[in-house]
Image (cartoon, rainbow, N blue to C red; front, side, top):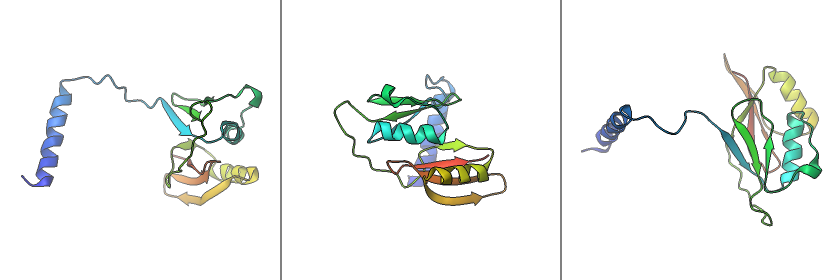
Length: 144
């Protein structure tokens, strides 16, 4: 059987298997973990971006839960206590923050002095730009 037919057959079999089952895995994003090398520096960066108050004396390894107004959480994870993570940043966005004001968001990020990876890219119903966090992770700010 050629490879393409085999892929289609496996897909059909997988769909048939799932049609009689209910997955215990929810169709919902729960938490995004961002691996960081310096928790206090990353907490400062993300809380400034979101204009959140933070008492850095209360921030302690290994993780910090960034306040997010939705079901999906954002956890900054510095790893086990006593170990410093070596971070390899992705060349692609890890996640996005939503905005209704693209130009205002872009100017705000510029005023913060954050590293802007891309200028605003516009489509008919969607716009975005990207920035880099202290560990060089790319974060997208987008509409739509």
